[in-house]
Image 1: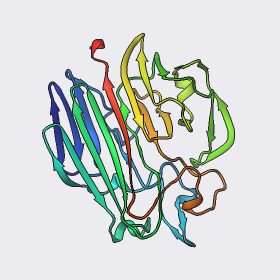
Image 2: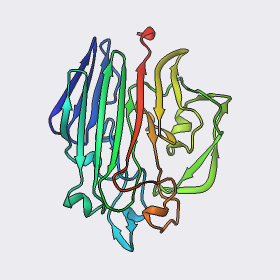
Image 3: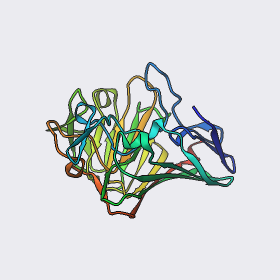
Image 4: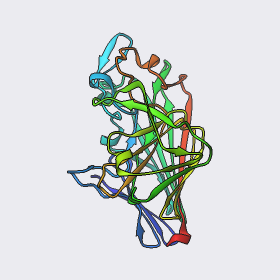
Length: 287
């Protein structure tokens, strides 16, 4: 753990670690909204995923005929970010490519994580810059674990979603087979049985937002922009739910292609920039 940045807005606070630019805590009205790490369950809180999302086949990727040791969710969560600028309620943290990152991912890049706290809402924006002279494939995502238990929890999507998600192998690879979910219109009721095996990955999700309800009350609103996929993940009986947003996803089973041909990777032209944002809003009326 590195230096911690503290943001404040009214009675809300957010705590961000320079290691991985990871959101360590978010408190509103005295309520702590984020899971605190437990080594035996999940030793993270809200890691940033970059330059891949999910598992890679055999922990490797291929670029231009060469193989690189790039595993689960990439390397951003283990790297120290630098403070670019900050104020009382927002901060910009940046990670630049160096020789160590190029040994894993052979591109010159800049990844900026911008956090902005406004009352009971917190916005995280990932800004990806291709500083290379060649096109750059990448994926990114945000993986926060919320203290809201999945017990008696309901996800209410903004629109109707497909009632099937991909099955995932024990190695984290996406299988062609589908798993049927008990979605009724826009509503998905959560349970230990539903969340026990693997993440529920809504690929090319139609909705641009959702609300998490518990025991008939809205607790959390999630709005996202320029993220194609959404995942719900938990480790029952641990009392947390991770609501993840991704631009890409794990390797399909048997995939041995180049990063440029991996499904759902984005490719930035030289000197091009992309932005991906999510806003989490705590529903105050339930406190």
